[in-house]
Image (cartoon, rainbow, N blue to C red; front, side):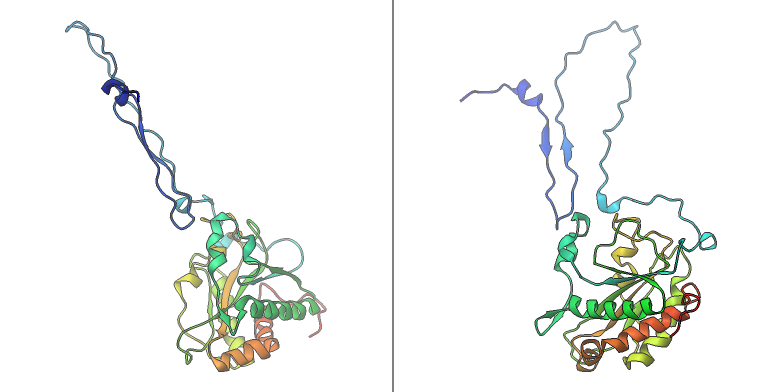
Length: 279
């Protein structure tokens, strides 16, 4: 065994690596021990010039960075995309195995009923809604859980279903983004409240959740796979799969759910049906 002298030990830095927490990247923190250096003696009347050392650059954690530094247009500067009216229907939890590292948590989310995952019901509702819209002349994109980077459309709606340990919990919820650069998302949410309940018979829940308001697809500052800030967006929890009444509509009468969504889109001034479309 070789022995290393004290001066040699001081010449080496001590590197501490922070562990990875829940799949998130944590920057390595480097601590360097003092290094023994030879210092030349100078006469007392010779001024000593000391240069300030700049601190080493810090690596910012990816989840705290601002991926979209702006400038972000104001609601007054909002303009719809070019081309025909495009509606995006996102199927909650569909194809989550494609999620990149920044959205790896999606692979463990979602609810199910009697062995059938929520995404199956969400997909059926999205397909029926899309078919109704295409008959009216709209261009429809049915999107998986992972949104294309900076995706742009006239309107984006994420379709999900709720669940609870309380079988009596029931109702639907709709939410606009907490940060809405378009200034128009709440108008669409208000229309959904007017059309969805009457079409489905499912009651409205007044409250929305923090996760709905901060839905990852809305968060263009944090995630690469998120909407362009000028896409009008909303999210709907169509009802509770764990409630017999809500489930009877979501599972067995998805056309009623689709009708409630389509009626709101048609009534929204930003997404009127194409000229000459027949209902």
